[in-house]
Length: 438
Image 1 (spheres, rainbow, N blue to C red):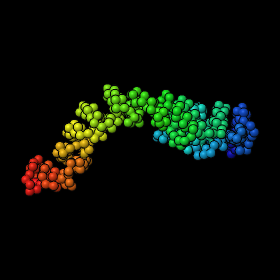
Image 2: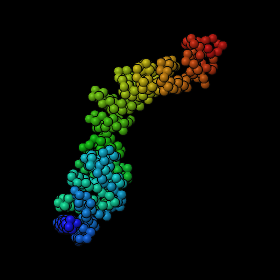
Image 3: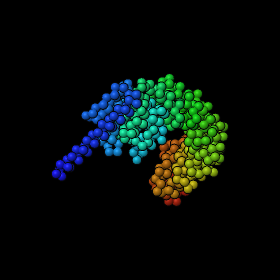
Image 4: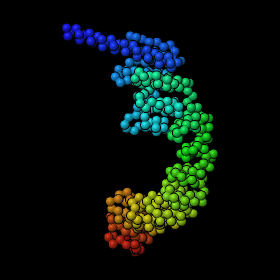
């Protein structure tokens, strides 16, 4: 008797579930019709509703999930390469950006050919994809999918169909990239599309148009990138960015991009303002540029070297090397004694180019004070070798380091080995007799 009752109850439950399933199918069909889909078909056996919207096929079927029992699938033919595009929920770890829209990328991970992805995900498409924060949504193998409740279908289905229609439209990738690069409200998206145009389509007329438009963009980073690409047309923009000092990195790159096209007086003026406003990256770029001006730049470079420290002092030392002027030698010799490792390295390298015989002993002493600093010792030896090669009338072996740490500097009057570091423990700077070098 109990078995019979149990069977009846089970059968009743199955009947209830079946009837509820039929009711869900009717709701799904109604949602498809309200959405304006055509050729709506209902399969009572497989519990599935199929419909079309032009080239798009829409299926509503059982998902197998308890809380979201309905699955919506929008199959889109899409442009070439569309099946290689993937959009899924963002993982916990950060991945490489594809769109330039941080808010969108906080929700989705996008993969696929970069030009196609950037062209597809314009402002409106990103908005539609981000519209439902309460449901999972992904794109894979040309199909847009989500799992929802029966009631959510009426709200979600129209939006998914609209996204599908956008994906299915004929796509002119260069034109869309140019539009995104100049019209998208997100600066990161505009920059990403501009980079793709420069990299993928450098000779396309739409790239040229977009670059010219981007020279007046509200984003300094975009103006900088565009101005660097348009040549002479962008020099005014670069000068404005260099002098503006609103963003240290942007101004520094603008100074570097202008290079020798930026007059010496303008560069020194920007340098002084950058130092006052603590725009150190720009100041370093100015120092590098000034170094190409030769002896005229020594005074201002030595002033920075002697009064500043850290990266500014290092940049000044390197710029003094670039001047090629021997008048920079005293300041560089003094820098060898400062308690800043990278500055001593830069000063030693600079002395290798501009130093005279007077710099040999300071270089040797700096190396001896840094017994564990193998890099400085190597650079000092190289600098001494460079000085040797410049000595007037020098022959091979005239200037060298002795094999021991006690090596000092001596000067002989013979034709060879005229300037050398000896192994004499007392090794003083002297003029020995004619019989040969000490």
